[in-house]
Image (cartoon, rainbow, N blue to C red; front, side):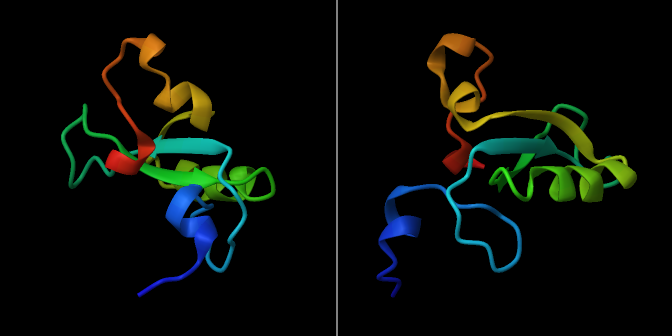
Length: 86
């Protein structure tokens, strides 16, 4: 059972060992495994956004990079919903 208050309330960066608050959503899919419309997500802090984007990009997986606020905003009208749903 986790007692870490950061992970319980604030989305954190997906980089290994990082506990910083997430600022970015990196939407991706593996075309060998996922349908073209499917989007998996990684969250990134400012420090790790470029590293994680590059990791996904060189594999051809990266589809979109947006702020966490933009991703979760219902005003976007794209039906993506919350990053926590991914």
